Length: 222
Image (cartoon, rainbow, N blue to C red; front, side, top):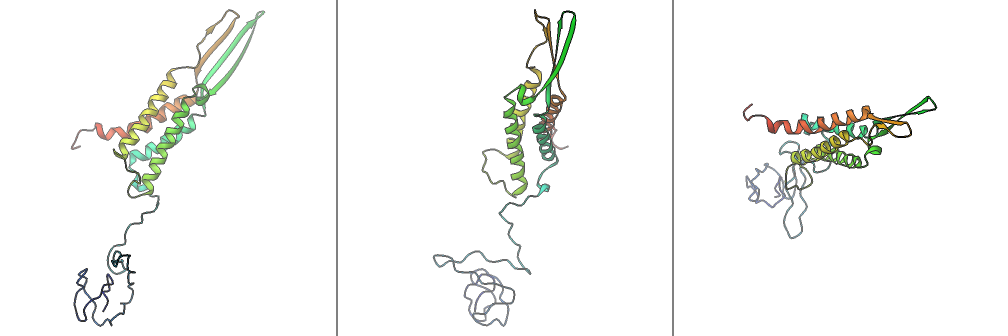
């Protein structure tokens, strides 16, 4: 007689399996399998693989493959993901505007131009790649029930570190303009101002970082 749960040999008439303790249905012929059950194949070395799960009993094991589930994100992580995506976009928007005017023979000639964040400050490409890393971490977190990479610290600490570095870089880029205003000896006047991309980038960098650290600043018990 074969155990209907683990496939081990069970003495005829025995109410339970000596190996797994599962109760045995009555009237199962030797070597036969109960309806809806499948015998395990022997594993190398004479052992048996893990007992199967069935529709009427047991709980099916969770799939170990990638299965994106946004419910694995907390509200703070959702905000961080959206803000990081917008931060990437903002790097290619006008961060700085330049107005140039010159007076020649009593006539004033003026022109204006703009530069994106990555054009004005090349190190903002680092912000681009860090923001991509933040999105990658969030995708892995939502795709696996357990984070697939062993970290010496938790995923929240990793996200706080990445978004914190981005906030620092964006703040420096926002405060340091690529040029100075003034009038030179030839009568050429250059004025540098901020474009809307700089404000969008700064707001997104703050929005990506702050929600992650707020829980740690709240008093315990509230």
